[in-house]
Amino acid sequence: MSVSGRQVALAVQAMLQTATGRSCGYGTAPTTASVPTGNTIPYCVLYELGQVGGLGPAFGDRDADSRVLIQISSVGTTAEQASLQADKARQAFLARVPGSGDFLNPINVNGAVVIGRELDREDGTSVVSSTYTYVQRFVLTVSIPNS
Image (cartoon, rainbow, N blue to C red; front, side, top):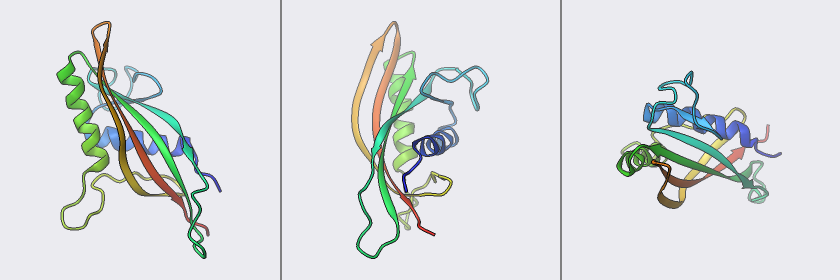
């Protein structure tokens, strides 16, 4: 069974908006109606970058795992603003509950479980027409429990 990239992306989008308090567009800038802050800068844009499936469960394990790649582009009117939004996104993905090791911000995917997260790459800040963007790529390991 394969993982729905769209379902994972929507779950990540919801987590980012809750954890950062800023809007996050899916493949494009948020609209004026986007929750919680519309298209007011700073914001994030989420891109699906595909997945590597068939990692295969261990022999006798009924779960199937996929590594899902997600790009987050943090957008600001200054380099500092884009970097601050990127810091919030990194924290949202990687922060853990002290003492338990669980991730602080759950990513709830319908029919699947996110069992691992890592920062894969940071390309840092670029600027085009006075808009600054800080790019990060995260990898989620997603398991689909076999019923």
